[in-house]
Length: 241
Ligand code: OAD
Image 1 (tube, rainbow, N blue to C red):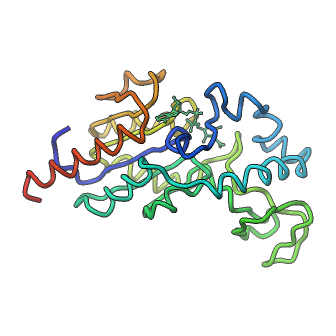
Image 2: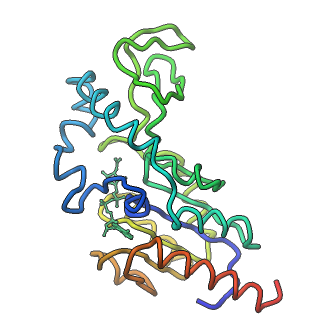
């Protein structure tokens, strides 16, 4: 991939934050091996027992918010800073490690752990503290109507119009640390490829859709991704850009 790209689309998943100490979802020690998705990550579960769902996310919050970015997050911020082309980060992660690494142009399509939405008025509350059924909305003063601003199964991911546009326009699509089984994110590579982008995947292991990628780089992304970023920057320099 020794080209100068104009628009790079980076899709990140839980694997990019694994080396910051955060659990993935489907690996052997992943969240979905220890919890039932249908108990904590569906609209039905939330409607049935909102207090239980709030407790689950409140318990996860401190660990996620205290985590520190690793070299994979940091190298993406460096790429955004030094690369002449536009670099957008579309993350499935609810952590804020791209922000902590000083990245910009970040789209949290599955929401963020430190946000809650008032179902009464739509106000987004940003809070590192617990949010539960006793929380009062500062905007409409209604009590007990907050939902974690996390996209549950059965809900539409956020920012899809912008994401679709970036997918059509990108000339390089990079997938980092995602198993590629949750749609629509799992299908992004199809769109990017259809519109002519080069595609590359970084993962610890083989994924079920790695045949869709022009290149598959196996290994810890804290090592493989910084190497790739250096290559992109070197190519840019050699092209005199
Ligand atoms: P998964 O847990 O499904 O996949 C994590 C991927 O990261 C796996 O393919 C691992 O092999 C890979 N991985 C782990 N450590 C890595 C490392 N150090 N370097 C490179 N790769 C590594 O997580 P996601 O694909 O992000 O949705 O899951 C997608 C969505 O499913 C999540 O956003 C979440 C979940 O249900 C919501 O909560 C809405």
